[in-house]
Length: 373
Ligand SMILES: [Zn+2]
Image (cartoon, rainbow, N blue to C red; front, side, top):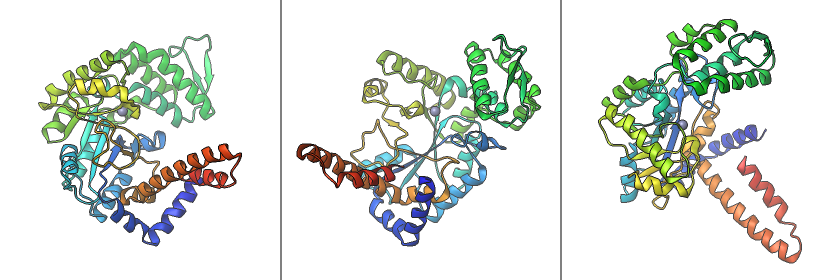
């Protein structure tokens, strides 16, 4: 409901010229966009927060061109931000994890002279096999089968499991992942995935030959780097503990796997799942990491901490008008307004508590909540 209302407000704002006005008001802020993977088939129906339809990605590029957005490499953009020479509305494009289709997306960008940074989590991305947990979830989500025979798949005392409802499918998927993934035996995982696919009336070979749910693999990373793409750090295990020793070990392993493939130094980082804390900064400094991107939406200015860069995660869940609102800066102005309202509410609440109630607080809270949604 909020989402629909938001889209209506955006369309009205654009029609009134407020997107163009926002572009003028926020032009000095550096935009950083974050993506994961493109679909090769129907993966965006399965996980729209990870996989984006090719057509959607092409519309994003068309919009960047329509707005005459200057897309810069990460290092270049930050140097220009420091020097005060950033072009208006300058944008950096990043990809997380190292999915196979990142290569296609990066080449599409390159054909329009738009560079990109790819953050690679090496334990998973250096294998070009389909990712087991995604295969399991994907197969269970798209099946029409209502009952699954569990022999050889789960040894929990049951012979069959009902997978009629979405909830049942999700529960079983997580049980299979918890049972098999910790063993990390590629041949064993493939055998389970093959059996599951066959019992669900699907085909594991279809997934392999279509290149669905797969990562770049070592060769893919090497090729992308040699074509000129900036390949950077995302931890080895997609896990970044707060403890300095463990964090440093993740960075070291990530680097040891990446740098021989890229023949380049790595000094930029992406927090796995966007989870970060100022406690992470010490190990990042010690490891010589110069910048780190979060998943906190917002634009970046000279004063933005370089180890907590803000970034807008784009996905199939984001409509075209929402993306345009973000690029134009209209959404950034709403975020600033929300911040101002929240601060006013806090001040007002403190005053109200002191004087025993204040009728202006309630409507302000409502406005803050609406902008938040
Ligand atoms: Zn990630």
